[in-house]
Length: 131
Image 1 (cartoon, rainbow, N blue to C red):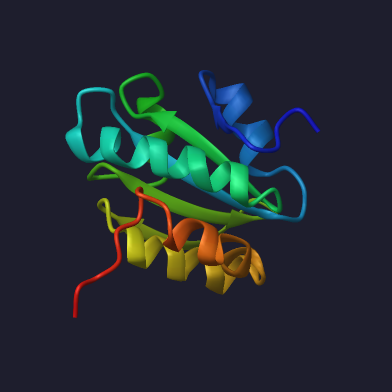
Image 2 (cartoon, rainbow, N blue to C red; image 1 turned 135 degrees about the vertical axis):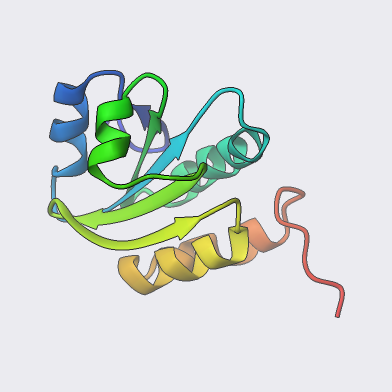
């Protein structure tokens, strides 16, 4: 499938409605802005996760481009990550909180976190805590 392994950018309301409701798998939506430092930090992380988790669909919505969509979903800070299945909102993470995002994906996608597993933990993108 052409959409696996990539973060799909939704540039129109029509594209948004089609993508976030599509299929049975978990949909992770990054509401971001090009001028936002934390959004720029999250972008390569989400791109890597999209490659590692083909059972999860990753979308991105620029809040300046689709402000009506951001308002409809009460996005008040960026980045805000929303989690959907079959068009139903499951969860929300506000901010560039990578550990919380990993846990939330694992909770809603079942085996997705195992797919991340050692590949992600050992990558330079996800430094491990030094406790």
